Length: 111
Length: 114
Image (cartoon, rainbow over all chains, first blue to last red):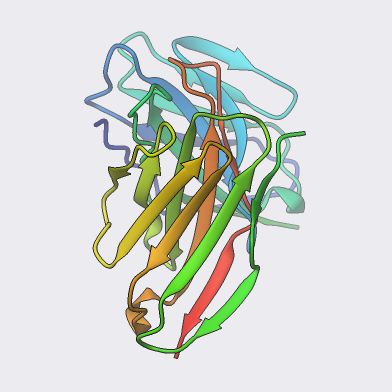
């Protein structure tokens, strides 16, 4: 199973772009990279998913280099409401596939 | 919208009690998961199931068991609750597939064992 490593915490200010990098050196060929966001007292929710190169949606962008051993979640122009814990998850959702979360990155956005 | 519903938001139980945490999903998902979350430790996988009556151990199965008699329902059982099982418990479900899918989480059950 691919283990992920992320920074434990990050600070930012409103309006800045935030980039959170996740290392996953032993990612498998079939693994996808998924990022989740969790607010206090709530379950995590899906933000973005990718396999290679770049993926963008209305919330974030995900950059994946060619070797796929890392990925970067990019949040454009963060606001106070983006304060949350962000988890990088590497794996498949196949039958019998575990979904193993790392410790996550606690992002604090300040005014 | 996909909905994953956990039976209780808050629960207080006594040491030694048998505790049942119920989770129901309404989107015909094959996969279901139980996690516990503690400060500084992230989400840790207890058990998961990819089909009715099928179960697999996660990283921390000791002291827990699970039951999946119907596709939509996945129960976590604490056979004899202990104070070190005080935690937030999260249930999730997902379709089965290579990718292009996601896990949906319930709101969590905060269990206190006294």
